[in-house]
Image (cartoon, rainbow, N blue to C red; front, side, top):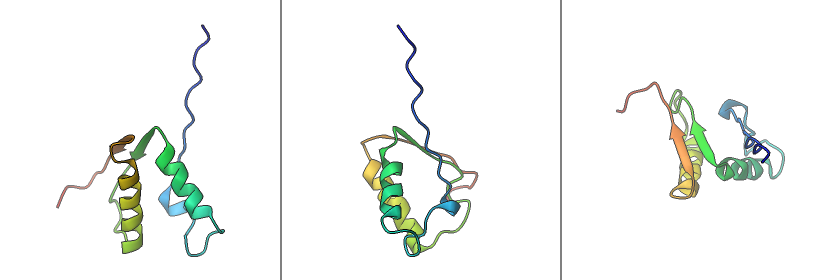
Length: 81
């Protein structure tokens, strides 16, 4: 039996993501759909920078869409406050 192909990997840096206000039409929604559809979502270095209300809401939307539907791994070097 041939070996199964490795699943695709999607790597997105939030500091390089399209701004929903200035990006190409539909680009934000397309990126959002890609992020929430992966088998395992890994959020590395979460909360390394302060985020504004819009980015905070975006994170909430991703977590809400994936809740009880798919795996999420979160890493951070910051302590809880």
